[in-house]
Image (cartoon, rainbow, N blue to C red; front, side):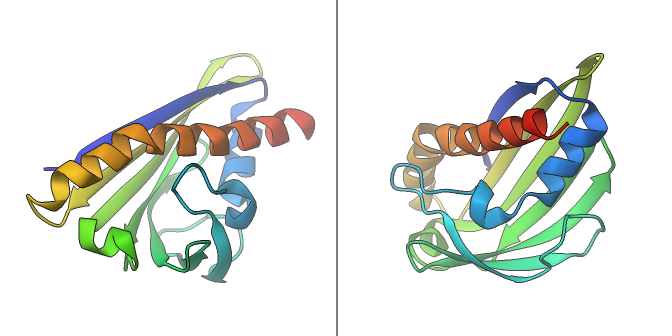
Length: 158
């Protein structure tokens, strides 16, 4: 079973511009602590905008845990997705893998909707309710706060 959550935001900027801002956002600035969820403190590996399948980066988080991302699909300017693995810290006991997906939809001239979805695979039946609680309670706000940063940057730089 997977546990899914998502967040959506509308941006007053053209789709290609919004895509380039999102794919190129420095993860340390994009992912900030939210409630008990950590932010990104350090990035190793691919440090340029996401642009090709197979690109990898490794994050050290503000709670001293770490995680890796691998780009699995990209269709500019409509979408990109990545797998998350190598969890350490608390999430290592709860999650055996996750997938992030960004979808960009032109909703009118110079207007774009971003849908950001996460799917988590729990390590087992004991981890599932704890993971479900974290993902459903905290993850939407975590995603929305990051999407708000993308929106502000895209609207301010067009």
